[in-house]
Length: 194
Image 1 (cartoon, rainbow, N blue to C red):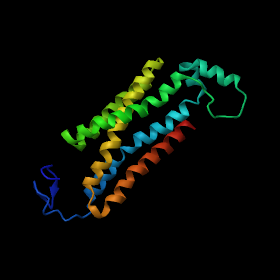
Image 2: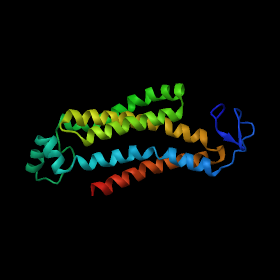
Image 3: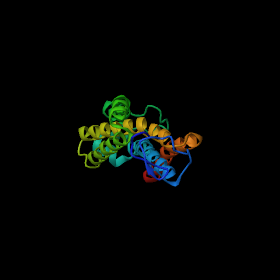
Image 4: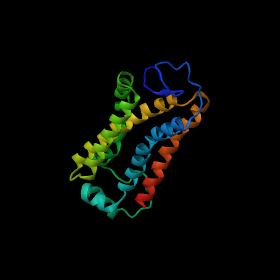
């Protein structure tokens, strides 16, 4: 990273000509920690599916869906709920992530990968706080939109950052850690749901 202030071969350098392309402990840890940005996406995928099937959640925020579920004795789970509000709750994250990824590419290019990841993490944290404190559907959807913005930023900037940090020989292996983090997030969310 030219001019990024990284320590290369023990010297502070604006040039990468002396960089040996080795996988150092610093590079390995940096890539793994950055790739953990996938945890937020995976966790949210897993947690939203479980939460929307929990009776107390439906009873508080989507009482009409809760009543339909209580009356429905069929075992067919396909298209069980016909609720625009519940669909909006679920899909708002994905739509916000899609739109945010376009903005994130500009932010990443203009301000750098680290700042883009930090901004995404902060907005995700705000969304998590709003959802935790939610008292109505509007707060839930606003929280989900913030979560989506955070996810959009992380999905755009994390793989790029890891690719640039990792030596070319190990780039693929270290980028897979991002995908592994998404999967671990889904696993943890399902354990929490259980």
